[in-house]
Image (cartoon, rainbow, N blue to C red):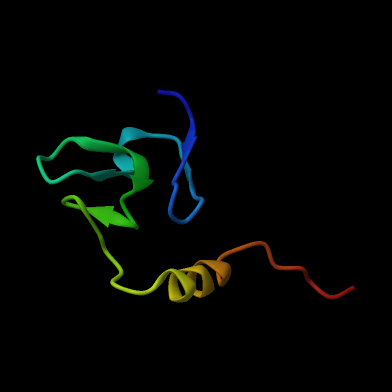
Length: 64
């Protein structure tokens, strides 16, 4: 499997087990299982709300 990145949250997807599922049960090549399930996004929020949610898990700079 070629390494890919979730097009929703940016998480690296390195195995089939990390991939989301389409409505028919096939794997999604675009989204991880934390964002996408059964052909739908898990979180029902606006794009701005989702960006804010994902930014909580982004790189954090520690004080010197």
